[in-house]
Length: 277
Image (cartoon, rainbow, N blue to C red; front, side):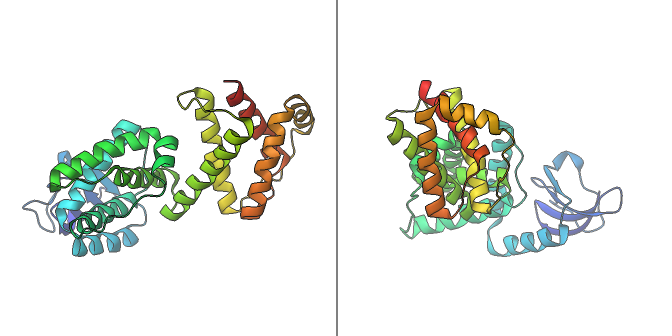
């Protein structure tokens, strides 16, 4: 690939073999290089080929406003997170995480750290992301000789989750609150403590994440394709179904979202399973 423009030592605009403009990121990919020269393929970590004009504007602003070292560290953290979580992230993570790390360090040095109100929920609902985020926090603390609290690991974990879901951070935090509220209803109604390492709990939480997304996106699930099964489940698991009715009331009052029989069916089954477990 041939360099069109050097944005910084690690980011360039380039033309690929098909003549299409792309953004190339990699440690030292543009070191000692200028427009018209070839890129060393062994130094390429990431190629952005979608919506290049928009991303170019983002990168230009990032390079202008944030020191290069923070962008490099964000790239290291994302590379490690991809490897350990085995997941792909939305490209916006490169910008949002760089921005977050930079301004967190500035706030720390000014004595203005922000408490994460979703710390406990994030640790419980996104265990793997939080574990990787804690490792990322150690990298940040060592790099900048600071002592950021685990509240910041929760923020980083939410950035990972947000990038997995292709959503926005505000939406991710709202989704986390919806899931936690529903789990609290289940726990109090059924008088149980969840086994958070169990497969049934993992399945319940996964189901609730997508359910919460639909609530917040106003995506109505109006199907009643399993009507006969719904009646069977309703009669067989009466207590769990009553719990679901309580959840439906909460969702309707809080978000104006009437849940369908299909939603009630699957929620009842998940709650029954996690209760038995």
